[in-house]
Image (tube, rainbow, N blue to C red; front, side, top):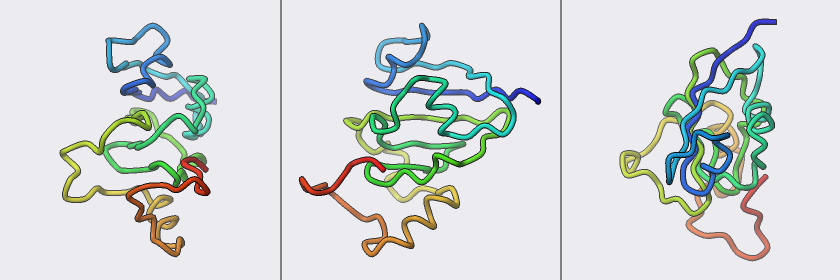
Amino acid sequence: MSEIVVDVWLYGGLSKYGRGAEQGSFANLEARLRGGSTIGDLLAHLQMPSRERGITFINSQLSAMPGLQPDMDHILSDGDRAAFFHLNSMWPFQYRLGAAMIRELAEAMQAGKDEGLHHSYGEHESTTE
């Protein structure tokens, strides 16, 4: 089976999963995976629990956020860029006017009664899926 290379960016406390690529508050590394791998496979490769990530982007498109992570089965392609932000990270400034989303996240938001719009989570709500 073919191999793909994913450009991975880990921000904040997630930089510890950088396998020696940590540069203070972030890490950047290339993940070599088999063709057909998913975000879930990438997280397993990094040994990073999904519950530790907050906002996630695939190729500059929002794919997950706290409490809504429908991207686990999203198939990655060679040359994709995945950026994972720690739960304590703030929303990136450049996306203040909205963000493009992958299909899986847009569908999950539309399916929820609140359409994925939270500003905080109560004790009864999970911050991960």
